[in-house]
Length: 320
Image (tube, rainbow, N blue to C red):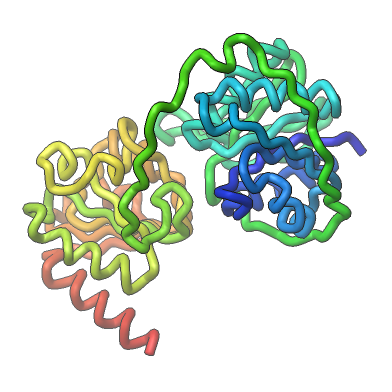
């Protein structure tokens, strides 16, 4: 069976959930070979093996931390040349998509971004995408070179399938371009204790109907009761009620959780483009004609300041 390269997204050796999803999808089209780079790369081997990696190629060098993106592209190109894979998979993060695009150019291959499913076709991997503001679903395949595909978080449920997963050192020669952009400082993001927005299984978002920054704790309380991430519409972000990093939509982040709850969000196309692939969508809005109700699985016509606190209390009661 052909091998499939999987880029490992990790933090000091702790493998993030989108990588486990990629390994699960990779097993549909071949034997996963993981590529882990940077500090703690070797520590990812056990987890990668648990989810099906037959090998884990690892490399650590100061360049991965001191410079942006290009050293990792150099490493992925080295891995590609060493393995000659049937496909290369990346998580659809900002970094993942940039590395994927640069790699595709270097190896002369086509690229598919933001896939939501992956299967083996008669002529190679076939990727499912949600396109044109999630109005259509398409199935596509790469017709030139080795398929390079990025996959949205929450596109597949991680499934363990223990394999050998032995760690192997990857020899990397850095190009002249690798040191072109240097990282001069870093600042840790303040932790909220909530899951990352793009990876969360549940997202609770607030919109214009929340009425102000002082009212967002109503949305946060529901999110915390569910162990969810907090999102916001562009209207709420533009009004300064919530940080731009939490914006869901075409000009914000794209999410695809198991459950998406929209509180006080009208459902403009800009917002829908960022959450329409959610598995189950629930909306609370006092306007019965709001466009969001054309999209939802469950809708509540009512004042969010009455409905959401009751929902929060009900969740807390059922939990304990």
